Length: 314
Image 1 (spheres, rainbow, N blue to C red):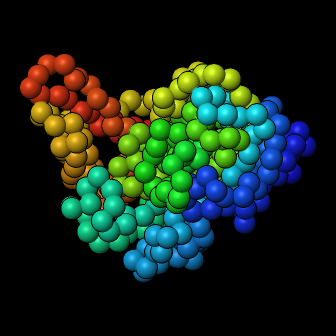
Image 2 (tube, one colour; image 1 turned 120 degrees about the vertical axis):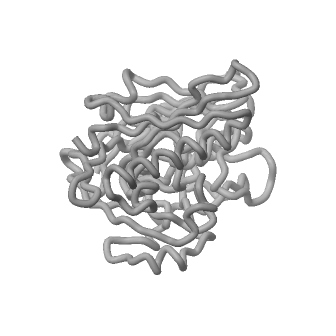
Image 3 (tube, rainbow, N blue to C red; image 1 turned 90 degrees about the vertical axis):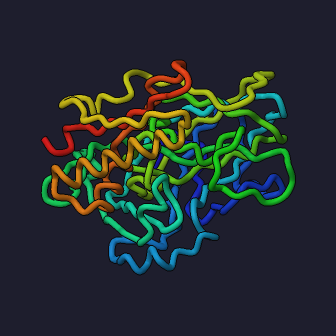
């Protein structure tokens, strides 16, 4: 329960795509604080007893359910919805999967794979990966956004100008997010909660984990944002920084190719130095490794770096 929340949105009050004709789950005044019960990105298709065969048979029509939508009274096109991310109450269970055809290195990892996680939802101590790896946790909502002005059903998988499946790890507790409003009431929804993720979410999944989220929704009239922006309350990588990083690079004229090369090199490095199965290394780096553009001005070649936190193994 959330004693200071004005409303509660339950797990069944969710949907699987953006559609500005959906009936709101709730109509709220600006400044309202809302508790959202968010389902995991598989909508419960993957659970503590799941096997890799469940990954093979995932129904993609049921991925990334988002709780809502919320009609915010007075919200009009051209406004911004101000989303103050108050808190997360994680569940203690999560999963990471390699889903065939999905992810940055989908052509290299064509078979399904699954890792199930347990973690302490009270202490958020790093979660164990195998016998030696420990991944620091930082809960956040991967999908958070408003309805599009275009009518009809729109997939929740791609991120959009009004938010959606942003997968920005720093949309954590304490962050304030501003989302463009394109329809009356904004029709805001949230879901796809993660216990941890690296910047890039390179295998396509993070530590996917159902959890409760508390948000305060307010309005900035006439903001005329073209895309989302946000403000963090402080440092964003201190949960990973303590032991430094191993870093691989990709260099060339295409940023996507360079990103793939940097991640592939890190998978190879961990497989060689930690005696890991390459697909396990690929899933692990998706939960805690960060893709960064290191240089984008020295034409014709750009540099993408992939940072893997040494604290996972030290």
